[in-house]
Image 1 (tube, rainbow, N blue to C red):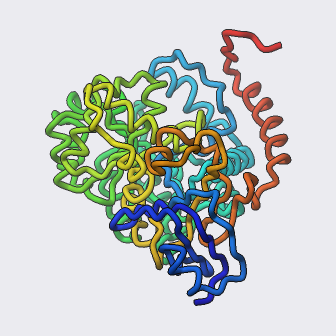
Image 2: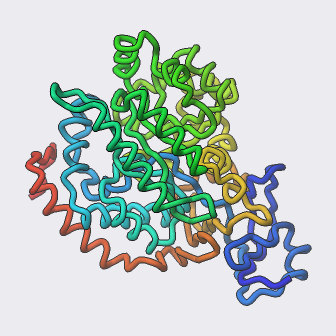
Length: 457
């Protein structure tokens, strides 16, 4: 067998159909595909490769898939105060900081977020739906080599008197139609557009249903925010007489093509509907903890898992792009909340960041596991580090001991985008300097006050 690259002697955590972990394994890449996976004794003699990598110091995993990340928040990372309530953090800080960016600034934030994800083992992500300058962002992402599903900021509800509701809905649907036509994803494109609704109470019934029709016609999915705090349920009950998921069920938009982010405040009836329809749920434990959403007190994620709901993970804001941190949190939060160490074992957290996420992104035939025929999206974790030694249980140690700082190399679509801890597609030093200058100028322009309890001169 001919191949471009052979990684020999590594520990392979395949997350394949049988969940094989191969202690002395080998994996071959040809073009953009994995062409061989198995014990080194079987694979190495059968493959002629142009490049052979000694994998004995590495644990190899599928590339991680971030189910919810605001990539343009990289421009104001660390600027928003942590003591804010939900409404103030969203409407006084987050929304103006997102909407005030130029196209060049959004592209810069996207490149920075892509770098941060690639360097920590994330090879694919689903944007959270707050991109404004779609063309500039798409071009920036293409240059990095990352895989993504991205969409523009979409909402249509007329809250102000005098707003033309019909015109707002028509404009939102036209925007969705345009981005899906120009950035299709049904032919295996690495980066494509999805309808990404802001969610909460910002979309009318007509927009929800129109987005569903457009997504189905283009082979795409939909993602939206819902129920991080009690306010969403309160609004839907007051205005529709039903809780959010019950209302979406009545509209006919639930299903495997829909992913709802947060869902901290979901009741038993909503969980039953999510399970019955195959709707995906994205949990962002880091954001939930920082935002004080009540995830450990109120969140029913163990019940969601028990009901068979497909759960995946997101990092949400720009505080961290390292998806290994939410994996650790997911494996631990509900053990403590339920006083039950059997809840969400490490292997389940890893599945949420790989195969579960691939399924939600409608890419499970292409990514999410190390298997012959799948896209060559994979990560080499360096075990010649203190957090990895001794190496006795690769899956548990990956989730409980390791972090993104130990990511040595990354491939996306067969291209090595990180090598020896450095990104091959981005001039890191130049990007760090550029975004530092741009961020300082931007936060000054925003007019929002810096809130630093220990002043920095």
